[in-house]
Structures are given as structure tokens and as C-alpha cells.
Length: 127
Figure 1: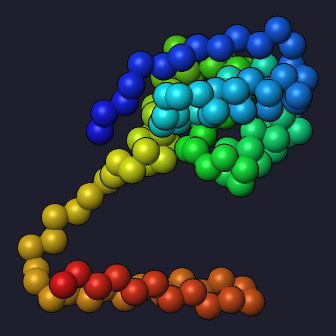
Figure 2 (figure 1 turned 90 degrees about the vertical axis):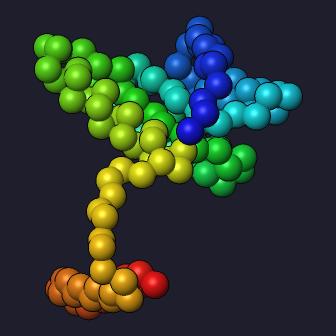
């Protein structure tokens, strides 16, 4: 997986309009945006919702929003947060989270999970 060099943009305020305007400007540039990563100052559902709406609906691009407060604390906590974020980014860019080498050919795996008020059936077929 090839990832280009990031472009860093810092906002002067935390208004939703500032985020939307800056993201739209970045997505409209000549360079193709592979991933949009936003670090927001706190737990703001309104900012998170605006970013996700823009990146999922209006201008589809993989996005990751991180609460800056989750990047503070002892090194072990920060390392866990960064590892989880990197796994999410890897998956959003088309990478595998994990894999299993199944030596059998023509294998069908059926699994069932029963949840109250719904029945889910998952069927995986490996030709």
C-alpha cells in the first residue's frame, strides 16, 4: 500500500464552518486525497457528524476523526490508541486486518448468531 506525504492544516477556531470549508478546499485540490485525518480538540458530536457527512456522503473519501483528549495520558494508553487508529486506517485504505491460511479447497463455512428479534446467517464460500 502506497501512502503519499500528508498535508497538514491547522484551524484557528473550532467552528463547524471552519472544518467544512477547510476539508472542502482540501478535497477540491488537484492532488487526490487518500485519507482525511482530523484531530478535534474534544468530544464534539456536531463536528464529528459534519466531518463524516462531508467525507461519506458529499465527497466520498476515507476519514478518521480522533479526539485529542484520547492522545493524552500515560505512554501505554497512547500506544494502544495509536495502534487501534492505525488498524482502522489500514482497513479503510483497503488493507487486511488479519488473515487465515485455509489449506482446504472447496470449503464452505457457515456460522449463525442468534440475537433477540433477529436471526443472522453468515455464509462464507472459498472456491
